[in-house]
Length: 183
Image (cartoon, rainbow, N blue to C red; front, side, top):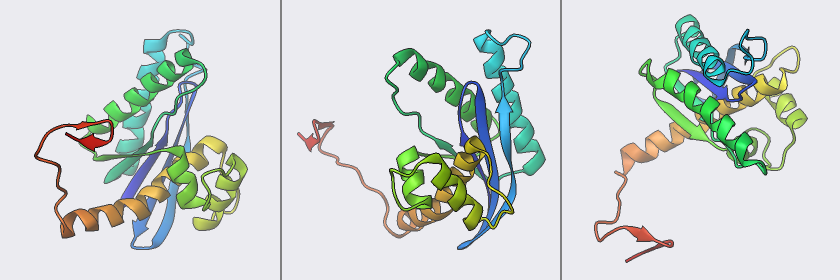
């Protein structure tokens, strides 16, 4: 299965493409989409279009079967969080517009899956991605995070699909959940 991982960012969005054959992972491609060099650098809609079009080009070139995107975390600055959310939205929209199934993982989940610790720093993620994919060098930070998201989906996504097939997921029929408890 070919998996496209995305680490969204308004200035620099990382992407990573891997092939997963059971437990075996194979590197296909990785890189970044940069919006800073855009002629309309301060123009948010133009930057979002660069991301949307860039994801579309990656999809056309590498033909992934599924995608995984990092979930936005809340920054100290709410404005930064909103801008990052818009960049993430442009990426997710580009994926679903091309009929790709999209999974979502937090940075903590990715770090735990790739490094073994949710508190791993970027250099540790880069080194483990290099080792897991048998790369000749360390990928850039954004590309490494995107490859990490793809690796996470390769392992977690398959397990979740098997669980879902074995036992249908059920939800409470007695009402909505409130405060962590059913009414």
